[in-house]
Length: 277
Image 1 (tube, rainbow, N blue to C red):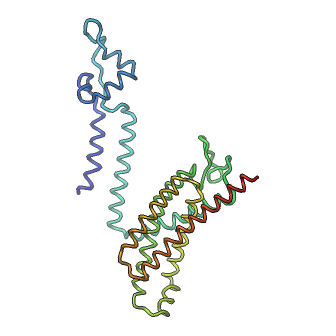
Image 2 (cartoon, rainbow, N blue to C red; image 1 turned 90 degrees about the horizontal axis):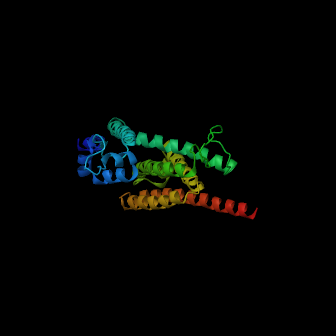
Image 3 (cartoon, one colour; image 1 turned 90 degrees about the vertical axis):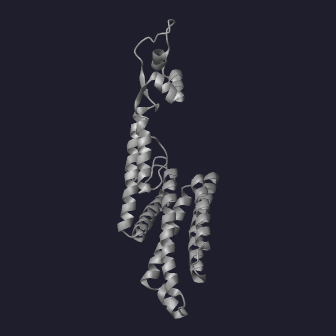
């Protein structure tokens, strides 16, 4: 209940700033707004500046606390949409398994990563490349995957990759629990089972996402990835997975980091070839 009140209170605080106030009240409630308008809004400065007799040249002007009511309204609508999405997601998780949502995120990220990697390796950084092959960017920029530039893709992948890794580690934990106390033939049977195959495919998907993130050449994206990988590794390692579970998790995270390193190496080699040419 308290979680649901937070978006309402935030939206109410933004809506209060849209209430128009007379100039004397605005100067008391929000001196910063009044000072800004006096400096940069000539009509406001003329309306609130008294004449030599100490009288205002016209009726008392009104203005909201916010500097731009139109932009505040747009932001309020966007915030309301985001709050609705967050509440709907919480409601969805109460009815649907979080594991099912994690699986969807995992495979969606893998599909987009595959598209981005094939596009980058086949076409490269063509200044005239079109998004999806037909959409032209009016503001310029070099598309990467389905995004208009590489930094946008890196930001999206930084949000998806931790969720995908969590879904993968969850499956590894389930497999590790089934391996507990099992003999070597039983372990090999579990690894070659459909559950083991799903884990292998999930690991390949995460490696593909890490590779695509490195191919973006986004320094901020790679820096955030290193920090995020370190935090995830610290969280996963300190959890009581058991010896086999920790081994599996370490191998999975190491493979994703290695894929990202491979992408960085490809970027370096391609940059050197371009420089030599």
